[in-house]
Length: 133
Length: 219
Image 1 (cartoon, each protein chain N blue to C red):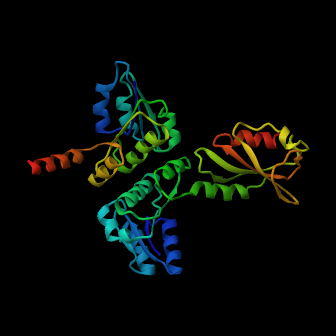
Image 2 (image 1 turned 180 degrees about the vertical axis):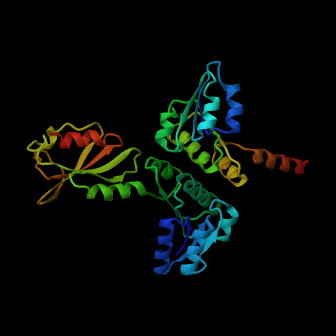
């Protein structure tokens, strides 16, 4: 299985050691050189450093057209929303997951059919459920 | 007409002033306080400082009654988010965006942005036109993804000079759509013979421009 991750932050560095190996190949695309260096030694992990990670040419260089899963996990909601939709609509990636911080954007993009993850997204649902109890 | 512009970049700034001058109502939303103040100082309180992807700010800007939303923040990703929010949350009838990565044009159209302006394409075309001895000009990206409209002038020493158009072997999915000779423009009919200084308008695939260019200009 091939996994392409946009963004190298705490989410990515925590997730990658668990995911890598057992036939899972991971490519991480980011503009953060230090963070990429911290995960580049993990077997099964490839890194692509670029200052323009949202440009379609760089997404293709990182293999967006052959990946099974695309995870948009950068620290920038707009960047994640754009690349998740490129992966889904232009390159037809079978599974696309988009991290968003802003609750307004979480609601918007969930309604547009993206698989949205985010701390406050769960939090909002928890609050709503607690009120209904 | 009432237009909301998100982004007081050079484009947003000049667009706002030009729309105002022609009698339209304009509100500009801009994150940067100084850029925002620049407009207020010059033309009065038409700008609002804040995040142009924040529903609350957009509501304050009066987006719900806008006829058109124009996203010119300088970032493709932010412009897309602004347009999608405008369309799906505020139901504005027309959204427009300026993009920088030409490859995003197809995606923006697919996701419902009504007018997508490819700024790099426009600037490149104007610059290429002015460079001496550089006879390839990008005219436009077409709505089919990856298709480009280009224009090539035939140099006098090119191998194709004197050839009949149908004998010139083009890359797949490339077509000559118009031949402009000194006497005027004509459709590429059978038997048309290419001459030096002919200008050919062609449809080609992104990435094939160079191949087509080499075929038409190679010695």
